[in-house]
Amino acid sequence: MKENIIKMSEKILKLIVFSILINVSSLFSQDYNLQTIKLWQNESIPFNKKEILLNEKLDGAGIRYTQISEPMLYVYKNKNLKNNGAAMLFCPGGGYANVTIGKNNGANKAKYFLDMGFNVVAVLKYRLPDTLIVNSQEQVPLCDAQKALSLVHQNASNWSVNREKIVVIGSSAGGHLAASLSNLKDSIIAPNVKQDDLKITATILMYPVMSFNLPYRHKGSYKRLLANKFNDQTLLDYYSMENQVNVSTPPTYIIHALDDKSVVYQNSVVYCDSLEKYNIKYKYTALEKGGHGFGFNFNRTGIDWTKELKIWLTTELGLLEN
Image (cartoon, rainbow, N blue to C red; front, side):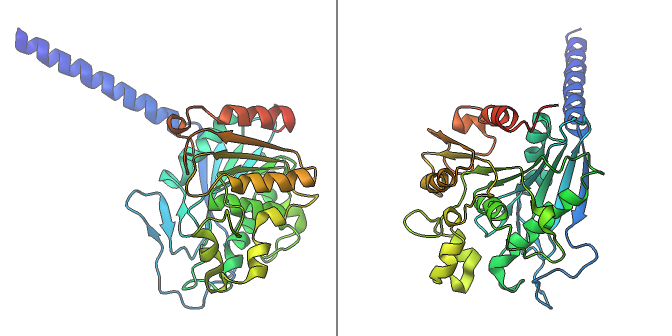
């Protein structure tokens, strides 16, 4: 009798676990479609060296790419389409040493913003300033970002995207790349990309690398992007994004933790000063805790910072209204 009860309990437990797994699987598999796109499908990849002897690598955790020679765009399309037509291009960080895209090629990142009300979230795996793979290394990440943004514009009708509601987001060094994309629109590096295809409605910067100059620069990012040119003061000034804000810089939301020891929060402060100088609409949220790279780990920050972001995108910019 006792053995029968134990066996029955085991069966019930297995059924419960199976049911939970099915529900979780359903939750993550039914809310979006994924399309993977090569940035340079029918063209030679600009700036790549003629002979590349390095193969792309993905770390054991499945989140960090290095030695990238063929950039990709992972396009997550919301199955529950919104009338607003909002779309997002996500530039992951990694200090220009790797592209920290997250597990399943950014699916977890994309899901937050699909749930927020975006129709499309495109996660970019861009090439790094690796002098063994590319020439003119400092131009390569922006080249790929410009191409990726142009693809979002060009596929607007197919992806249910409103070209007036395209947001660019970047974290850490990806924040530097997103800011470069937002400010250096007059410097088109990517071949066959038109000015109209670089329009950005808003920029979101998460604990961004901003300045390449002392005293606030991140010790690794500027050296990796500029490589053997890292002592060139003209380039240091040019790639310090607080120097590149202009009247056409899009409205910007910035979030940074005050206890960030890697990319100090003053990077965001000096950028905000420039935004204010040019009367660019912005919102700066300084968190008491979170360190660097907190992402969507709300246990680290103590708050769900995306709630305030959604309010800003909706009430200030009208981006997520249906």
